[in-house]
Length: 637
Image (cartoon, rainbow, N blue to C red; front, side):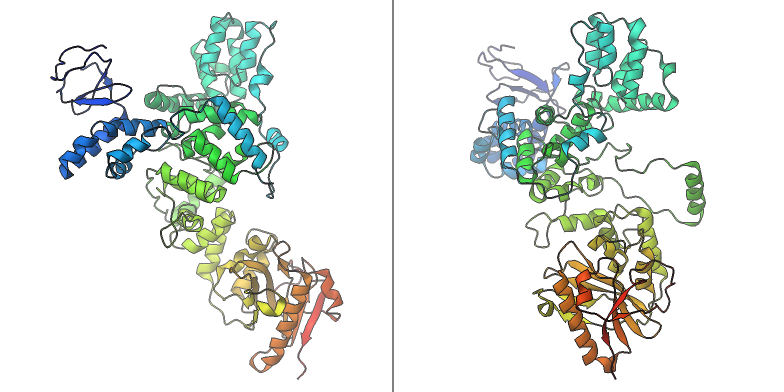
């Protein structure tokens, strides 16, 4: 509205078009695209629009600054609200704390940084696509075992460019177009088809069924409102429509829009429209469309908050392939609104499981659940950019861990420290055993197998182990800085060594009995090979035989980190140590099982075969030494 002369507040508008907004405190702000003027007018315009939240936060910061230094606050009164608005448009998370920190750096700092992050001009969609294509050319080869683009499309029904598949030909009637579009179309698109002539009475219910089959609950709910017969839906589909309607209300309240297809359960707090739409264009380049594209774009843009940071994430952590950006999105799970079911929550229990859980609950005290917190999405986004997909996989715990953890010196984000903190919220009673929870989370151990390990730890009696304490320096088997050693009798890593070396010797796998025996029996134990960094790269479950033998059941290696020659040198060094210390142990011979991943080349080095039987491990139970053993050493005196 053009203002001339004096306004009710007493200041002049000088003929410039200004916008009038009422705040919660009763002040009216009038602002132009180039600057903002604060007018100290009391409550006046009851019908004026609500002030933008970044401006409210800026004014709260100005109040703090006025108490500290009125002159400084006066200098920042015009520039700080503009700075807050432009930071918000650039995709940055604007909080009172960040604004206060920036404001204390002075007006010059705010002026220099109040422009948009990309040099004062918004990148056009074509510029973003060109940047994306250039990044793809420079991506390194993917050495991880991941799905190809074709596998992703085969495994995910909703991905394969639904718009292209469902788009009707020109001669197809509007009725058929309505049915064809229903699985992927939004309510607005369906409304447009009805306006163009689609017959609601003839085709509405059939279109509703197509939408329900594709789990497009937004379109299903809209078609029901238009007159589709709801009784044609299954009971679970009716419940899904009701759940959608409740969830959609949160989007309408927060953003004044209906949730995009597939996002109604997600938190609208993380929705950044411009970044979301730009990311959708990038995903379309990879052939990803429909609800799956919406989910991927929401995860990436919601976490990173701008399309520039999405491209930065792709450049730093993407790998060559047909769908590099989509693949990166699969690690991310943003927390859902309070009370909503999380994506990784367990499915409903079946009747028998529910009964078992009820009976168990009578005797077991339920652990109190931690209160959800408000995640600092800026911190999480920064940490993911710094640490990559390993940190992205922890974002789902941000409902309990507000910010990722930093390294011990506090200088950088730490995936390991963050994982340890997050693991406390993954397993029941994890707070009592955080190290075990962190280990299990690192290797994807299920809740029931975590509980099995927990019972072994709590109920086991610490035995007097009959396993000799062998320690061999890595220099003796061509592994500088590394070593071969016996695990401590109470080291629960022994229960999951198979997870570390990709074999079956872990709780929950075929070799679970071996892992349990090595942990609880006085005649069992574990020996490991550690790298110079302390990582376990080789290991063996060991047992004592009925005639005093020590047998390494098999020699397990992580990939090709240990060669047959290194194992041969290690075993020779172990034999020498047994000889040197034979007055301090009762071992009669050292055997190795020839099964499992024991290198076959060792048969040429150790040519004596032997057969020892475990002292307290059943003959018919799984072990790699059952059918063939090689003798490395034998007591001579």
